[in-house]
Length: 161
Image 1 (tube, one colour):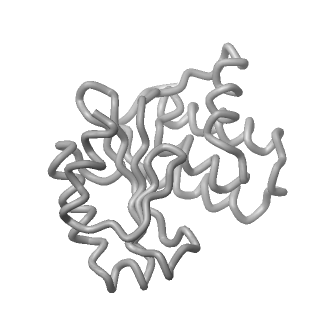
Image 2: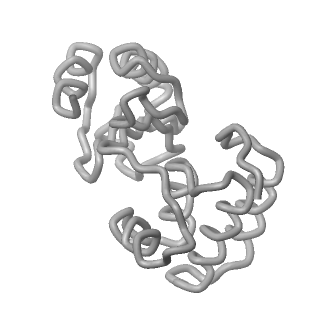
């Protein structure tokens, strides 16, 4: 088990994610644990981006993912305090979500799928939250923020700092 760069585009990870998303029953704890263990075999730990992917693929809350990682002594998870997700679905993108994403990235000092140097923040994109009428949408931890504007970015980032 050799640790490599924590890159969400690692070919073995992409293959595992595709395999898991196509073949698992949603809400299957066994499939979730399998995914987490296989991810750890690839990276040497379970990176935050993989925890978020697992949460989305298996329809489990992030709290469940973190609890499973703590419950299994063989699993070691990378942890962050806050996860910020920006919608990049077609409607939000048309309303300017790439500018919001760029502003949040600049304010937090990290890129997409990166963790801040202090380990507090993780920035991710999501194709759609299903709240298109209320977009641009940003999810901070479990709090959805609708109709986000560039003027709101500083306040959003202050909440997580």
